[in-house]
Image (cartoon, rainbow, N blue to C red; front, side, top):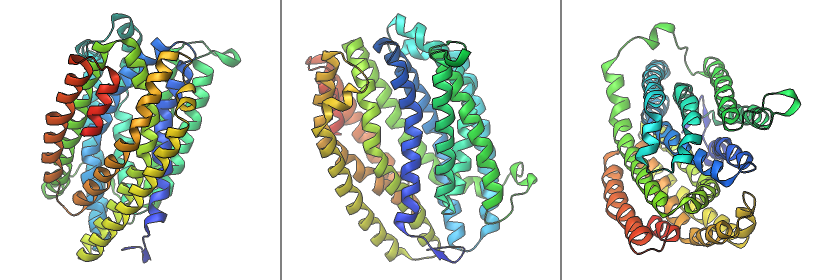
Length: 421
């Protein structure tokens, strides 16, 4: 399709999204890597808090996904002014939602950690971290909405560069505030939280500047407060089913984390390290899925349904092949990858075994990511939710408990359940 007269190619749209996804993951990995220098227990506690934070960030995506599809379709149909108006409304909706979530995490963050059957010592470490980041998570809600609008117009590089800047600020902040270098206070876990908040705030300010410079049509101040029922319906018709799928995935994941806590602290620490590595396996599929969604959305907006289908099938082949190659390479160096975070022999052995399992797990996951995004772009958001709920809760949760806890296979049993799902 076309963006201001230029045809959008998959590679041109996808590679900045891929780099951006990797950089966003680095925000969490930087905390895990640096805090692992204090102890594995601290790392496990922060990883536990981050699971709740990721859950909330995924919820912000329901407006972002609906907005991305609507904006890309409007641009494909040549209706840029309507794209600008629906973008402003979506940003307002996500900000209000983000402020509500911030209030909930500030008041009930510790209760959520207890609900996940966490170790009391880990709760004591994770609770202040969660309260600090959670209280300002509305910044991430804004960032998600603005990034979705910028990407929907095909300008994926801009978001990538902002995320790169956020990462640099975050890593520098961690270095100064976790360890107290160059005369800064040595705040440990609290320093990681402060660094995260500051870097995200600077990032969202830059994103707004880019939005106003690169928007296909000008966004007016009144667009942020003008309620348009048809626009809201468009956003929610795709966004709410997507939210249902995200809610189902993350809630089943939090349930499984509680199973991991029952297995033991070492299992939790291992799980946190392995997940931080596995996230990078997913980054390529996420990028190709998101890039395909933008192109398919614009093709659907222009009525090019056959071309949209061909684009999906081509993207699926590319994503599957590349993901398989990456996980096979990672499996060869699995001990070295886990060794980046810890020297504990029990964690090293368990983590390496799970990474070997990724050869089967990750290619299956990439299929879901690419196809589901394209279905949403075409306006079909309900089918993925139905299948997701059935598979996640009917397969993943039941098998994770049966294999990991009941039969005593432990963390490896939990990851077998992920793979079967």
